[in-house]
Length: 338
Ligand code: SF4
Image 1: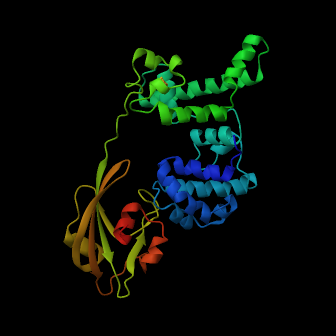
Image 2: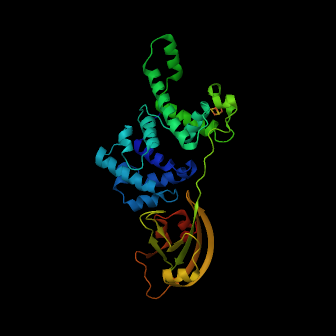
Image 3: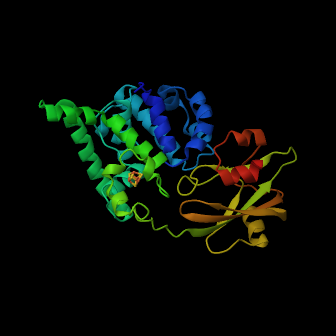
């Protein structure tokens, strides 16, 4: 395996936690161009890191990555730690990211389980388990695989053991990558390509015709509704009023057009006008945005601020300046039309 840069690997692991590869590839040059080294990321302001993350969603990851960079500088002398326990002590680093870094970047004998690996292992062993139980089981199985791969690499001196060693002589990193690749390309969630699968002879799901029902489908969480009325207010210079969101909850700390939120229904024009202190409110359009837990219905209004009305924390910005702020995708659409 080609040696990997630990810092860049850490950034890509964070990005890939909840964003698709195509989107990450799009955003990658901008982010690593802005923060090419771990120290440059650690020295940056959090709001600049979140702004560079814009468009990838799940902004807590940006804050955690920034926090992790600072801790690596503060506690580990600027070198990404190699062992799973130290990696897991960093913000935002769970068992998967720690295992991926340890095995694929530092060559440690550590297992990982993601959705692809869990599916491959469950099918290979014909285990029809519920989602959470399946992942727990897969972690146990992955530990066993890494240990037996390690034993095969280091132990055994009989011809039989040597021959087994030749077959199994792979590092945990290669094993992990192989399983992930198998799940992504061959053992796909729907219509796995069993005829082309290199381990089809070992697969119990295939032998029993269960590959389409393992793993058991996920029970999707019910998404709650949120109604947002966003008001685009321009001043005489064409600048637009923006304000930061609360530091907790959905899109925490990100910038937005003043937005009135309701859980049960869309806010009415009169309510919005008195809430923001604006007049001449005109409905410009509406759209829906889905997050993991919510269906957010946006109404976009335009209006003028009343004489003397002020919103604490709000400020008028040019659209060019707004493009450099940390804003969510729906607010980007509202404020910049993109
Ligand atoms: Fe997956 Fe089919 Fe290969 Fe089994 S034989 S591991 S179900 S692709």
